[in-house]
Amino acid sequence: MTYTLEMNGPCLMSPTSNRLVTNTFSWTRKANGIWIDTPVPAGFSIGAVESGWDNLMQSFEEFVNEFFKQHQDLNHNVHLVGLSAS
Image 1 (cartoon, one colour):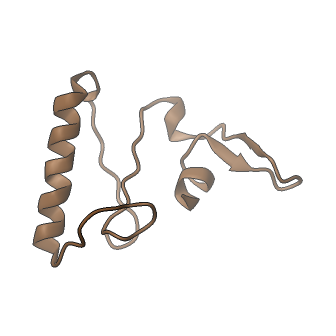
Image 2 (image 1 turned 120 degrees about the vertical axis):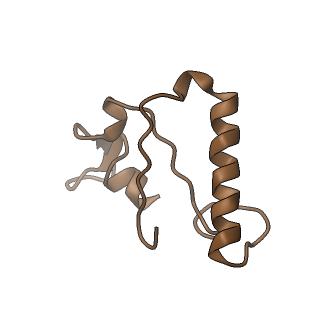
């Protein structure tokens, strides 16, 4: 959530108040975004814990393929960005 709110998401915490303000440099101003917590149990992710990078990457690939099957209108100009151990 930190990256969503403080780095590339649509909102920032105001440095002078306890309020959210618009992030004028948000990636979401020019693109759609989806943030995926992985591996389980990172962040808000739920499901069976995968063992090993191969299983983790297979699950991620299955998710991406299924997502774009269900949201074909978003399946263009796709850029994958990773953080941390990605």
